[in-house]
Amino acid sequence: MYKNAKHRWAMAIDLNSCTGCSACMVACSAENNCPTVGPELERRGRDMFWIRIDRFEEKIGGDDSRVDVRHVPMMCQHCNDAPCEIVCPVYATYHNPEGLNAQVYNRCVGTRYCSNNCPYKVRAFNFFDYSAPEKATFAFPEPLNWQLNPDVTVRSKGVMEKCTMCVQRIMDGKGKARDENREVRDGDITPACAQSCPTNAIVFGDLMDRNSKVSKLSREDSRRYWSSANSTPSPA
Image (tube, rainbow, N blue to C red):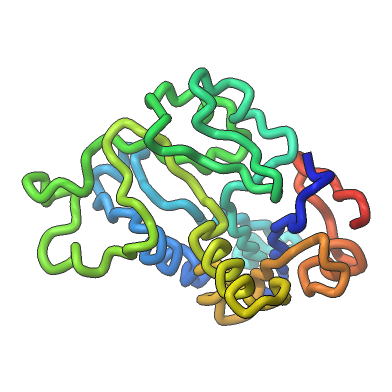
């Protein structure tokens, strides 16, 4: 699949640097037009976040009052052999040549097979038409509808959605590089979560660029490890 691809987009996250501030969650929601469903629907498991912060606690020594807290930003892992892709009956989710697990919203029929098959549980299902003004309880009422990102569609009722690694920013960065008659440089493309992280715990880039920061962190850093659903790509 990657034989003729020019890029292999990937993300590296320094778990030691993550403070669990949730700035990435807010930025992702604002960038990708994710609605805020409210506490009642949150309790029913119908949250619409594309990224979440998992919190883990470990007791230190024998003192129950001392706890070590660890945070893990969890979004779509864009698995190489994604279990969500093989169960979709309409091929709404697929792997593109640049390593992204893509989602075609207008092809999705809402079977939710992909969500059942996802080991990370990072897909959200639209139970309501959040863009409909007559359903302002779940939508973007005036003037919040003016904050919607015009580069990203507002998904409709009955479809699955998930992290795209801000594919609209990837397309914009590639377009600017093409207009300037040059190759995409490391740092040209930054997803919303990485841009908003105050500790720079999230790094995004091209693994096929050996000099990119994400490539060095993923291949050379002594603390590196890969998601079990992904494998280290072959050298470019």
